[in-house]
Image 1 (tube, one colour):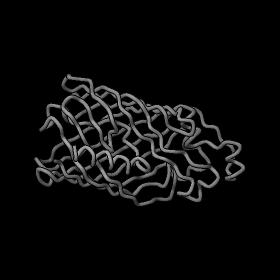
Image 2 (tube, one colour):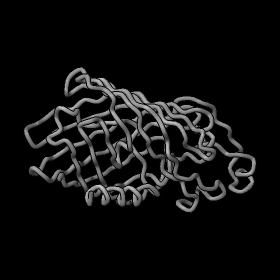
Image 3 (cartoon, one colour):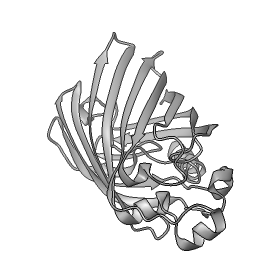
Length: 262
């Protein structure tokens, strides 16, 4: 109970700033050592100040991860959800994910555009693994944006390989599609925002927002401690890339995370 309480407190600390991953990537239940598995840690990130920014910031977040053999999971990366599948290689279920806030005060280039608050996104996921090293990934998330009616659909694939018992390399490629409500919230400029910011009015339509490549190195230091270091590069596409306050269409994020498994 104390461990669970600690995880819930950390979840509250993360909620205001961070966001969950596009894809759910949980450990298959037959690899879980216990019925209930917990880990705690912290991550340091170097990332753009907002989507399309050419300015970067350094920040740190607490990490938490809980996974149950019955299919439930709760983590800073995967969100809160349940995997209904009992078939080896197949994962599908529901989850609650998080879309991070975009604060106007974060960059002078956002002044006049207003804030976009943190949003909870109910959604679903479906993953299929051909082998432990090759997987297809997909997710659907709804509820982001100013009016909480943004829809995102992500499709991708993951490949990983173990160098030895302690080191593993992984790479994920994904494409993200969003509806017009999401596009308007994060890349559009309304008439009121145009007057306040000086940017030309802009109304993006639904479409592909970006293609993302992510690579990471995972090191199991011992039976409890692990370290993961990685980087991702995105290529903004379509109407998202044409936004008047997008100054870098190929943003890069670098991170390192340490965790302790109980």
